[in-house]
Image (cartoon, rainbow, N blue to C red; front, side, top):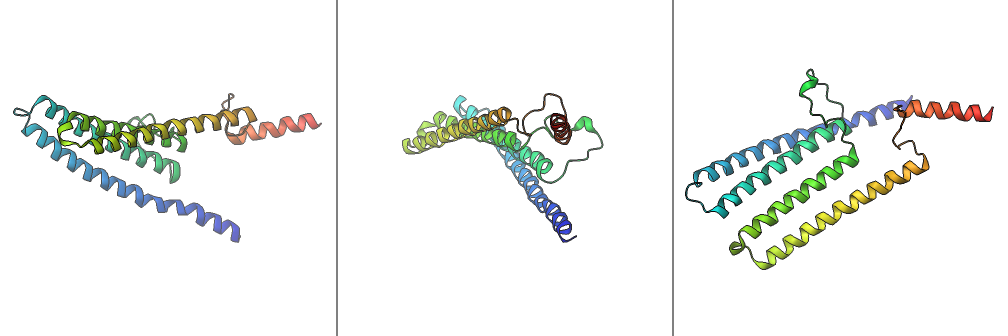
Length: 197
């Protein structure tokens, strides 16, 4: 009885994560305000701006939209993976990737987004060399390379883990018969009992 109550309490503690995702929604709204400010500033100077200034303005808008995508990805995937499945009345509005991005996939999408944002920041610096010191460009390049290498190592470690699980016949390996984990486990028990008999 005590163990069951404790387990229910621990399981219910996942709802403590919900305010974090609500806070990220607030952060998304703040980012929208900044995006609109940049858009107005970009549109006001479009007739007097040089080509490089227009490109820099467009890169700033892309940078903000990629960051917003990253926040939205964390909100949806994090909530569905760690709190509760979203019960939407109209399933047609549900993005196709929702419910399919597990923690490993979320890590890869996060690092890919961070690499893209870092690349845009680096490109903005290259477009405006007169305003950026050599030291700043050097460190931005180093940071970008570190992000890229981190993504490669994460992808490699995930690939090695999945490969090891597949070879060892782990229950987390992809199931070619399309069974759930419990169905596959029950089938293995029946097969083992048949072999023993």
